[in-house]
Amino acid sequence: MLDLIKKLSLLCGTSGREQPIRDAILTEIDGHCIWHIDALGNLIAFKKGRQTPKHTIMFDAHMDEVGVIVTYIEDDGLLRFGKVGGIDTKVLLGRQIQFEQGAVGVVGVKPVHLLKGDEKTQIPDGDSLYIDIGASTKDEAAGLVRIGETGVFCSDFVAFGDHKIKGKALDDRVGCAILVDLIRSELSYDAYFSFSVQEEIGLRGAAASAYGIDPDYAIVLETTTAADIIDVPDHKKVCRLGNGAAVSFMDGATLYSKELFDAAFRVAGERGIRIQPKTVIAGGNNAGSIHKTRAGIKTVTINTPCRYLHSPSCVCDTRDIGSVRQLAEALLCEFAR
Image 1 (spheres, helix red, strand yellow):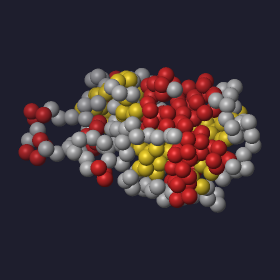
Image 2 (cartoon, rainbow, N blue to C red):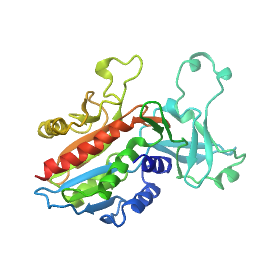
Image 3 (cartoon, rainbow, N blue to C red):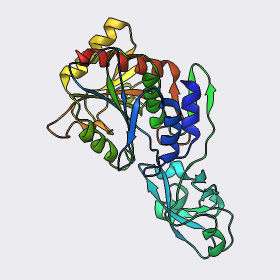
Image 4 (cartoon, helix red, strand yellow):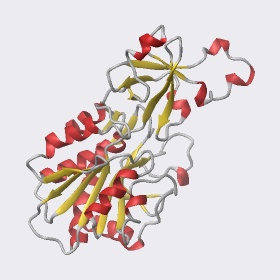
């Protein structure tokens, strides 16, 4: 799946602007399933398996990524902007931004030799930042970028070190690539697949997907923070690269079924799949909206550990991606019965 992850990672697709990602996924799954696009832009697919399951199963991964949106153009051609999704302000400083229509800019900050007093140690306020696209006037800038246009981090995709990959938007293009791979394979049971929109701004698309599919079980494929880095105590590392799929028992949006959490570890043990718990209660994902849909849906989240989440340089381990892929298919068989 590495080539597909790279392809999806390099595309631009902030929340509400997921069409390039959706189009790329469609080229991969068309002919392997039945699909449609709903009113919000979710791509919903149905894959016929060898057997009809006792229970309806839905997989979900979100297509969107964090980014910026242009809110105002100054007279000197500099752009004011807002964040789309959760981006730490310090991650933006000096970063290169790629806009939808092709313009490229740099997030500007006051030069270090002009900083005074507390400015030298404080992170700039987000409202003080701007994007420089090389324009000299408001009219020139408006010819390159429109108010309301979104942009994403510029970043290359690199395989490096011991089974590691680096790129932007691995949250959640990794999950999307795994779903594509499942659809292109021969499944034991029928399954629905939701490539959802607008996760980064409130778990919105998945709520509509789940309502339309009305499954008995949902399996969310996500990435989650791996804080296995210097000076982070063990109980705060969340999960570790190379230790396998990270399964959530609770996060900021969902308290997961103990039955399903235990089932994930039992099935992984039976099949020799590397697995670990996500050990910090933080964050959230589409499970938060899916499990509350209609009369309630039994939901589990399988995460790919990822360092430096929501930055231009997300880092994952390809062995963990393989573990998530294996566990997803194993849980399809478990829940189908």
